[in-house]
Amino acid sequence: MKLWGGRFTKPTNELVDEYTASIKFDKRLAEQDIKGSLAHVEMLSENNIISKEDAETISKGLKTVAEKIKNNEVHLSEDHEDIHMNVEKLLIDEVGPVGGKLHTGRSRNDQVALDMRIYTREATVLISQLLVDVQESLLEQAKANLDTILPGYTHLQRAQPVRFAHHLMAYVFMFQRDVERLSDSYKRVNQSPLGAGALAGTTFPIDRQYAADRLQFQGICPNSLDAVSDRDFVVEFLSNSSLISMHLSRLCEEMVQWSSAEFNFIELDDAFCTGSSMMPQKKNPDVAELVRGKTGRVYGHLISLLTMLKGLPLAYNKDMQEDKEGMFDTVDTLKGALALFAPMISTMNVKKENMYQAVIKDFSNATDLADYLVAKDIPFREAHAIVGEIVLNCIQQNKYLLDLPLSEFQQYSDFIENDIYDVLTPEAVVDARDVVGATAKSRVIEQFEQASRLIELN
Ligand code: ARG
Image (cartoon, rainbow, N blue to C red; front, side):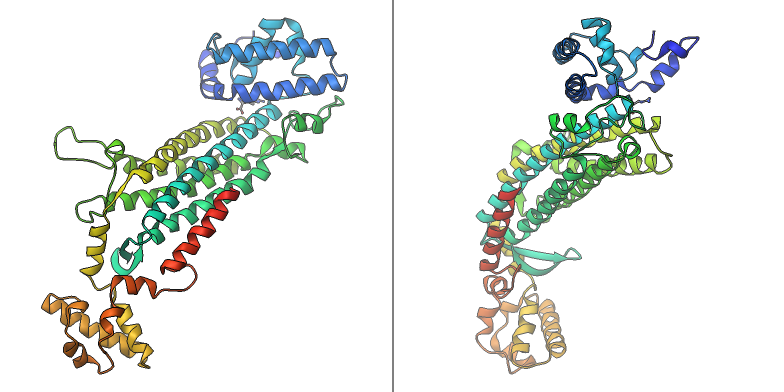
């Protein structure tokens, strides 16, 4: 017989049981569910809603059930629909009918909201920690590559040289915002819905604050209807996860490009690559590709949840059971990606010389030639045109700016003097960009310092 079978005259159709049960996936909430129940039962006894003895029996029973679930000693059954009712059934099997007092003053609606909040809280902390590991490995690579210069791109065309450290630091700051978003949303998830009952509260003189304190919540949800019917905290987590995935995916795309023969800027460690079943020479950046590829499923879960919620009347609706699989899959997906990312970054081999050659064999110092003329009081637009012609001339002769003799420069402008050969070297070009946040050595060092301070606080 079902825990709610009293009002029914016949058993549920088997297909209905199978279709509506969530135990297959919400068994993942067993720990959170029992944690919540322990706080609830303690609160019930503190407020004399159930006796101390009964509370003790129930608590002991719950702990035994927790152990048994953990050790796979019990069968979690679709007959009992979800983790909440399976735990209650197991408790009653363990301690007898007194176990039936656990659900006093509580509904599965506030119970599931509570479980999901505890779970989301834990996931938020875990993902933040993993992100910090990635930040640290990026920072370490950046420090090792302060003097590594490579072309910076716009439109994937070589634009202006940058320090590789500067490029990596861009990601450190992206992940910093991701961590900050997680910690900001933590405040909102960290509110207890317990005590909201099915939707309207409960007739028992419960103490919501007491249970919330036991569960280390920062506060309690102020409206019972809202407490049981919103999953915006899951939406926020999925939205934060989508941004994290997007940032990871962009870095992955760069790593895939950089490790191609066409770029040949980095080599990923063998431990983070795989081979081909057919082509013996292949070494593929599969991890980076998969992290990029899995971004879609995280976005998908965000859109699914937003869509599921958008038409629901208050308060609880069974549709909301659909919040779980996407949440769990997102946590697994991100956890997998982030755990691999930190070591993949720290072990990659940076081919400094190839990066440097890509800068030398290019015109990414053309802006500097124009800026040189501007410093001699030529209007920028005119300087731009002059340098454009010089570049065209070089391309026709298969030369680069630094290959031109002074006499040739001077055919375009008398203002160009011998010091131009110092101005146009990659080192001079990057260090000329000496404003806050730019690629000059001291400015990149400032970024190291700023990032270290922020990471410390994460
Ligand atoms: N398994 C359900 C869920 O995940 C638990 C809440 C069910 N509540 C109810 N009144 N049917 O949403």
